[in-house]
Image (cartoon, rainbow, N blue to C red; front, top):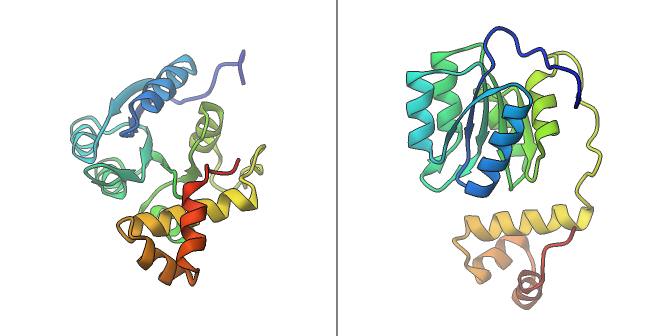
Length: 183
């Protein structure tokens, strides 16, 4: 992918919406090197404003943003430019949110950390072709840890409520939360 030019069509405009500033800058720079004309937004409100004023041909939208849900940006993009190819990113990979993202109009769904090559492949993939399996899939321990973190966040970081919902002893959950995330 490095030396060959990408076929981005006549409109290489790309909107990236993410509230993780360092990740946003890195991805924007990498996508510009691949030939996209990048515009960035750090919130749902800013993403919706760009989507309304200048709907892009491509978009990469983080699912969880500080001021709301990235699916609101996806919905605005679909209304303003139905043919826009949209990839939804999230640090909290879950089947339910993947289904919701695709139902509302996302082209693909990637778990963070996703690199520029994975994002580009997802944006340019043919609709009928299945994407190739990831080179470095998350380990089972990492998937378990991500799930526990997601439930913990959904319970407003309440250990007792999280333990009850996960059917886990509270002390066991506290030990898991005190450790670093597995690779």
